[in-house]
Image (cartoon, rainbow, N blue to C red; front, side, top):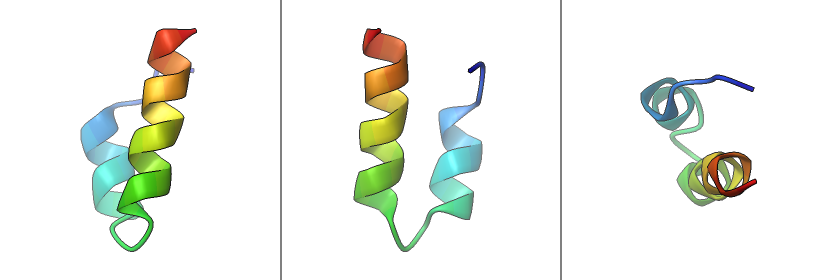
Length: 29
């Protein structure tokens, strides 16, 4: 999953926490 955090942040503006958590989990793994 090579997605940009900025894109998720912009798309998931309402769920900013979920977006960051998802990106963090993906990058962590």
